[in-house]
Image (cartoon, rainbow, N blue to C red; front, side, top):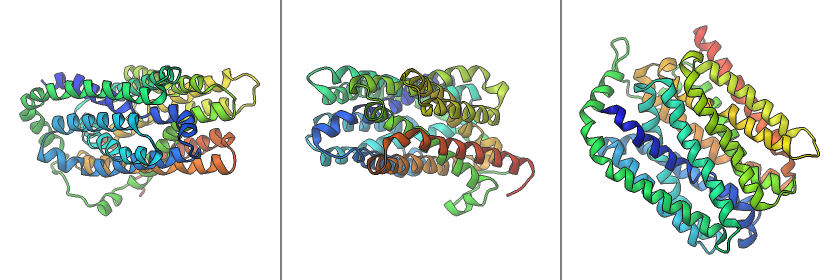
Length: 398
C-alpha cells in the first residue's frame, strides 16, 4: 500500500516546484510596473524563505498532531491562495504580505516527506521525487512567459499557476483516505527505521545535532548548494535581460533552461543512483555545474554558450540535493536521521533566504555581470565541504 503513496508524494513535489521560479521569471516586468528597485526581488524571496524555514522546523510537530497527508494538502492549498493573492496585488507591500502564507505553505511538508523517502525508499525514488519538483519549477516560467505577452501580464501568470495549485490540492485532499489506509504500516516503518544497532531514536536539541560527527560540514555544503540553486533561478532572467540584452518574455523562457537541466538530470540520475552512490553523484554533479557556470562566464558574442551553460549547470545541480538528503541515514545513523534532516532543511533555506537578496544588492550597486562568478563561489564551496565530510567520516575525524 505504501507504494501507492508515491504518486501522491510526487504530486506534492510538483506543487512545491510550481511557484519557485515564478518570481524570477516575472520580476523584470513586475519591478517596472510597481516602480521598485531590482534588489527588491530579494526581499520577497527572503520573506518566502523565512516562512519556509519556520514551517519546516515545525513540520514534525504538525505531522504528529495530524498526519503527513493532511499537512501536505493544507500546505498546497495555502500556496494556491497566496499565489492568487500575488495575482491581485496592487503594490509591492501587498506582495510581501502574501509572501508570508506562501512561504509557510511551501515549507510545512518538506522535511517530513524528504526524511520519509530517505528512510523507506531507494535512492532512485529520492532522485525521481525531486525530478517531479523540477517538472513544476520548469513549467511555471513557460506559463509566465506566455502570459507576459498577453494583456493580463504577470497577474495572469500568477493566477494560472494558482488554479493549477488548487487542482493539485484537491487531488491531495481526495487522497487523504489513502494516507489513512497505510497509517498503520507507516507507523510500523517509522518504528523500524528509528532502530539502528539496537538504539532507538535519540531526542535531540539543535545544539546536540551539531555535536554529531560531520553535521557542521553537511550544513555548510547544503547551505552552499541552495545558495547556488536559488540565486541561479531567481536572477537568471534579470541577468539575461540586463547584461545579455534579451527581451523580457524570451528571458523568462530561457531562465527555465536551468530548471529543465535539473529536472532532466534527476530523471536520468534515478537509473544510476544506486550504482553510483550518493557521494559520487554529489561530486560529479558539482563538477558538471562548475563547467556549466564557466560556459556562462566565457565572453562569447553569441548567447548560445550562456544558455547552454544554464542547462549544463542545472544538470550538474540535479543530483546534489536529493543525494545529500538520501545519504543522511547512512552518514549519521537512522536514529539521528529526522533531527539531521530537519536542521539540514533549515540550513538549506537559510542559503535560499539570504544569498539571493544579497546578490541583488551586489547586482544593483556593482554589476549584475557578477552573476556567474557568484554561482561559481558556491559551487566550489559545496564541492569542498562535501569532499571534506567524506574524508572526515572515513577517517573518523570530527
